[in-house]
Structures are given as C-alpha cells and as structure tokens.
Image 1: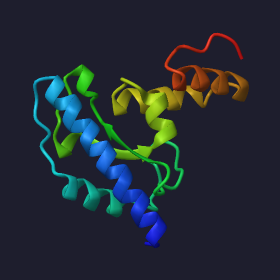
Image 2 (image 1 turned 30 degrees about the vertical axis):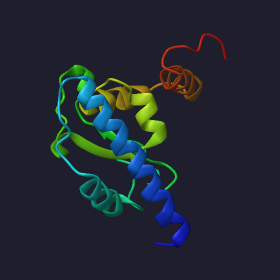
Image 3 (image 1 turned 180 degrees about the horizontal axis):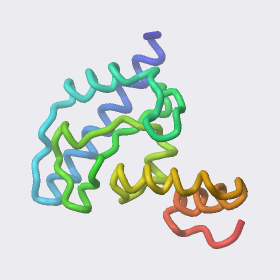
Amino acid sequence: MKDREHKLVMRRTANIHRHQVERARKAGHELHYTLDELRTWVRQHLHTPCIYCGEELKPANFSVDHEVPTSRDGSWTAKNIRFICVRCNQIKGALTGKEFSELNTLLHTWPSAAIASVLRRLRAGGRLTRN
C-alpha cells in the first residue's frame, strides 16, 4: 500500500473506530473490537468488491456497516460488521443487509430513471423532495 493510501486508511479507521466507540457508549453498550483489529479487517477488504454494488473498495471509499443496524438491536461485535462502499452505506441506512439486497433486486427490475430517483432519495436520507 502506498504511503498516501496507508495514511488515509489509518486516519479513516481511527475516525470510524472513535465514532463507533462513542455511538456504542451513548447506547449503553461496548464496542467489541479494537482499532488494530478494525485496521486489519479493512486491509483484508481493500481492493475487493462492495458486496452490494461491486465497486472496488479503496482507501477513499470504504465504509464500515452493520449487517443488522445497531438502531435495530444489531450487535456491536465484529460478526455484525460488513465492509461496503460509502455510497451503499448511505443508501442502505437502517435497512438490514437482507432487506437492502432484496430492495436492490426489486429496483433492478424498474426503469433506470426510477432506480436513480429512489436511490438518490434514500442516499439523501429521505430529505430529497425534487430532482
């Protein structure tokens, strides 16, 4: 990994881990993995495809997602973590991995303009009202 990519991964994983620790604590839970473990897992998943869209995970676009969102009683453990692209994580929101996969399957039976509209709205967190 190039020095620039390494620094980006180190910074992003530190921020993600800190944010996860804060969220877990606020919810009255404890995060069950360390920063070093997270960094190891991220390195293992870099340059592999996002499980939802197939985009290559890179230091600038990887995201840590919970298969079952913690907001829906998902655990704060490594078993519940998935590495996906930032875009899919933003669109997925509080859906489970299974729900998001089923939504993607359904959407891809629709016309491309309809797919784009729904995905833009989901990515905006439902705040988008006009195109």
